[in-house]
Amino acid sequence: MFELLAEKKVMRDPIHEYIHIQYKVIWDSIDSPEFQRLRRIHQLGPTFQVYHTAEHSRFSHSLGVYEIVRRMVEEVEGVKEHLSEFERVAVMLAGLLHDLGHGPFSHAFELIQNHHHEYYTGQILLGESNIHQILAKANINLPEAVADIIAHRHPNKLLTQMISGQLDADRMDYLLRDAYFTGTSYGQFDLERILRTLRVADDKLVVKESGIHTVEDYIMARYHMYWQVYYHPVSRSFEAVLTSFFRRMKDLYHNNPISLAGYDMFTPFLRDDIVSIEDYVAMDEPAFMYGMSMCKKHPDQILSDLARRLLTRDLFGYSDIDNEKSIVEMKKKVEACGFDAEYYLTVDRAKQQPYQPYRGKETSLIWVMLKDGRIRELSDVSVIVQAIVKGEDKSDRKMFFPKKCVEVNHEL
Image (cartoon, rainbow, N blue to C red; front, side, top):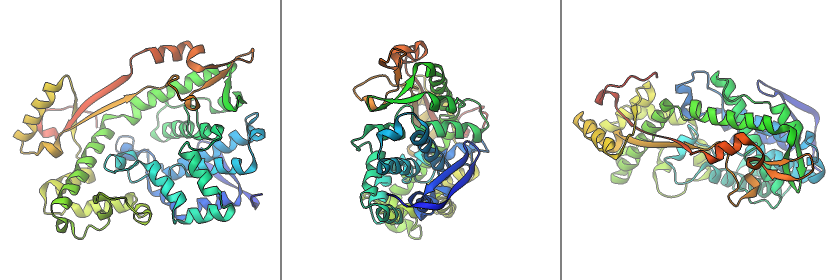
């Protein structure tokens, strides 16, 4: 048995109205330093450079994911009966803590690291951290169970499906939350209807046939959010400059470590070895921006210029790539302007398919329960999803460069 709070806690939320908390281990986890750090990590990385109201954090998103998982456990027919109390608490904690390992500017930070955020999430949960002590105090097996659910290692695939599938609590919260805070309508879908039409069958989540249209709306919302918000070229431009900034810093460090003496907040991330948990959780966006402001005065002109660009939003321009020859031509223009193309010309490709059909891994699929009780994969019964699956994957390949090197007219 897990200890309950003397009185159930509620937290106001613009997406879910209220976040409901009744277990002490969940409340204590929210108060942990590792989770509170997520207040200082933007949910959408550099997207606030485009949508000025996109200032929401990984903290609020993580609470939202927890709330959707809690509702799945409490409200979706068949879920509660299939899970022990230990599994119910573990999966709610997995929803809450799934983003613990995100670094500054979220996915942009991963471009310059040797490991993805999932790796550091596992290290924080299983290593010497406050959150590990909180979970282990509640149940010695809890840290490993939570880490296994997040890492897709848990034997009960229903738990993994709730956290990380193609119709999961993570995606459902970030679509609604990101649409709300960017002021766009692309990510809207009927969460209430989806939860009402979910069931458990064959030890996995399925959608009743009557919920197909709502799930189709959800998939289309995801498609539009990726191309209108997540893959916005200005956000990608910020990531291009940020990546160049950190590559330059790494190059300077490896050539002459003394050249970066005094920039201690960055040093753990410049080495080739694994960053310690202590150093990793100490790095949030305010710390990163402070270090960047120091770099603006660095004697290396490339590093200082890239830092200035990030701090003043003097980002790179961009253009579509017609062929490989256009990259060669742009490199010549960049160098003719006096820039080192190694840091001032970046090629990036954005690619996304809103639904992945069966490719050998069943846990990530969306399953539909037909009126006769048969269970089919979504793309077998939805004309809209069939068209998406059979169509070509949309991709967008761009190059990013200083705007002075060529005339560009972008709405930034």
